[in-house]
Every structure is written in structure tokens, then in C-alpha cells.
Image 1 (cartoon, rainbow over the protein chains, first blue to last red):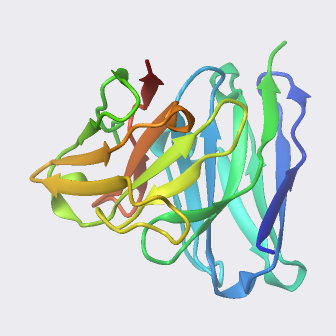
Image 2 (cartoon, rainbow over the protein chains, first blue to last red; image 1 turned 60 degrees about the vertical axis):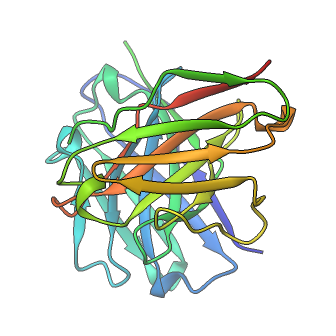
Length: 118
Length: 110
């Protein structure tokens, strides 16, 4: 069964840092583009960024550039999102997702909640 | 990287057909045949319903169909059923080598 399980969500103060993890199983992780998507409370989906299968290229939405970093460990079938300089507006459920390789997401995790508040 | 524009809400009676629009620009929807649609029920993760403008993944009902004209893509749900009540989001690849989602549409079955 194809599965993505996120972890690491927490309550953090503005200006703080947090690292999210996503454990993948049931598919060839090392051949897959991977994506992070977030959803603020009561709001719509926002594409955060993605990473090439070998980790050589990463793309981000403007609002997180310079603050968030996507990385992966193909040996551990794991995806990561390092979030620095967190802002209140970064509060959201963060979803790990597999990009099919044809410009759409076909598998989603259940999400992990990040709350940025003092 | 502005969100694609969708109507906030669309409603219909059981058995009717409804259409949700998704308007972007020539830098996203109009420039690529890489529009996808997602269904999200409350408290759940999104689910892929349409990819590549008009393709249905296996397991998705044939009542769901997609199309595109110029900078606007559309999702049509025919034979509306109670279980179709959910939020729907379009998404497109962009010329910035990123992706963008739509603002979301709440579908209500009357």
C-alpha cells in the first residue's frame, strides 16, 4: 500500500524553527518527485515546494523562499521540510505528497499541524 | 504566484450537473495542459479527481469530467450525489516551474 506519514508538527513561537518529516512506503521513493502542500485553518490549499528525485533541484513558493528548505534521504525513504524564521501566517496543516512526475499530486499524507503563536 | 480563481460556492440538487470554473493566466492554466482537480472532505486529505485537464485516475467516478478553454479550466460533476458535497480545488503547473492551487469551491448538494 502506498503511504505517506508526516510527523514533527508542534506549537512554536514566532521566529522559531521546526523540522517536519515524511516517511514514505509502498512505492519507489527514490524515483519520485515529492511535494509539500499546506492549508491554513479554514483556508485553501497552498503549494509550498517540491524536490527532484535525486534532490538536486528544489522549487518553492515565494512566501517561503529563504526560510524553508526541502530535503530528502532516499536511503531512509524520507522527505523533510526545515522551517526557519517561522511567522504566525505559517500556521497550517502541512501535507507531504507524491508528485506523479506528470505535474500533479497523486498521493497525499494525512498531514501534520504546525501552530506558530506566542 | 497568485491563486487561481474559483467561485466560492456552487450548489445543485441530487441528479443535476454542476460546473466549477478555475481561471488563471497564460503563465499557468492557459500555457500548459497540466491542470488537476482535487476533492477534500472536512478533516481529510485531498483526493485527486482529474489530472492533465481531463483524465480520470482509476477509481474515480465517470461522473467527474474536466475541460479547458484558454485560461479557464472547468470541472463538471454530473448526476450530483450527496457524497459529492466537499471542497474542490484546481491546480496548475506554472511558467515559474512551480505549482499553484485555486481558491477553492464549496459544493453543496441541496
